[in-house]
Length: 77
Image 1 (spheres, rainbow, N blue to C red):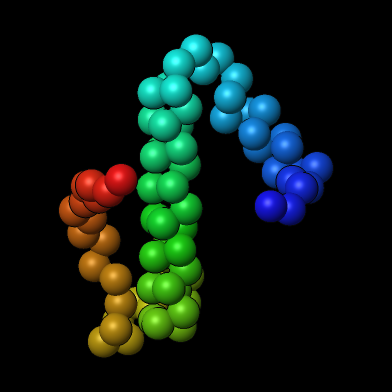
Image 2: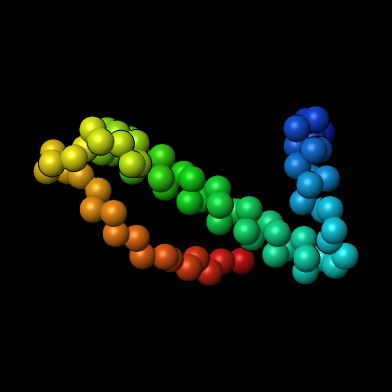
């Protein structure tokens, strides 16, 4: 196993801050993982459409975002 970089060690400190049980760490890691997935999916949509979220570039282009958002829940281990 390779050693963690300085930035990774900072992240470890942030995640473990105020955690008192392994369950606390697991919950934080799940939230972090969900946030990373959401960011990746948003980037994929930006790339697919050719413009960033909330950009006026896509208005009336026939391929614009409609502003509708439906929250999703990902269940994983």
